[in-house]
Length: 455
Image (tube, rainbow, N blue to C red):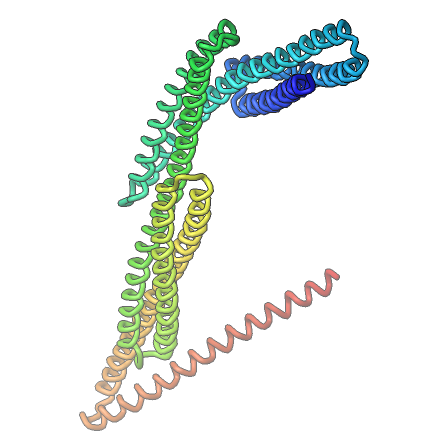
């Protein structure tokens, strides 16, 4: 008798534990369905979530019944133990029957809790699969958009990353198709499995079939979720490839900046050569020639800056391309994100160095243009000086020819007078410079006086 009582109590306790576990599993299924609705607030997901919540409530109710029933069964067992000591056979028989009923109730409650758990999990599977299908579809759309933008951005350059964007978009499409197919099967098979649960749950010979159907639904749900994850990774790769395309464009600009800077160097060099030829003809030509040399040094400095930035842009682009390949081969979002972070940092450096190369090339170009203008001024000054001297010599020659000097005397007088005029011209240039400086100084003083008066 004692062993039988203990066995009945043990059955009730075991059933209670099963019911509690069923409630926990049903609650988890409910939470998963609710999370799925947050991800994809679609009608199909909302309906499935509502069913999961309802089944979780049923599982909870039956779990509480099982807990209470197990408690009552324990009390009945204690009562039987007390009666057995009094040898009241009729009372013992009644209590035994009562204990049997109580244990049966606990077992039924546990059975209903597990049934509710199964239906909650089926509903959650539908919600998760539909959400995964929606996520995969959105990922495909984003990947397609990244591909289009990459195609547009890469029109002016030879691009490797453009091909990677196209490949990733195709991968996203494949995964989205797989997710949709799996989700559709989940929806239909879940209905079949639920019908089996409703009609044949208590039939021992149907339990294996029901378990198989439920597991098939769960397996297809996992397939839909995995496909959606694959689509999302492909979308990330496509968008990252678009970023690398932008780096390729900047790198191409940096290369062109090097060409521009080299052309500026050549221009500045020619300007120096031109200005050197003009030296000695006039003092202003000398000054302009020195300016040309200074500009040439600045051009060379900027050209070096362009080359350094272009080289760094090229190096960073290679890093970005390597990390793009790592992201492409990633099987988890964690690995992909690590590669993405490194790639984006490299892309940023490419853009920064590319822009710096362009800016330096433009400065080199402008300074080369200044050098050319300074060389032209030197040429002009030299030409004007030479022409003026030539005209002066002709005038002097005419003068002395009229006055009747012989050839030797005439040559000496001409030479002396030319030298005097050259000296006078130099003095005139110096006076003009002093007047200019004096004028600027007076203007500054006048401005200062005006400011004082205003105060």
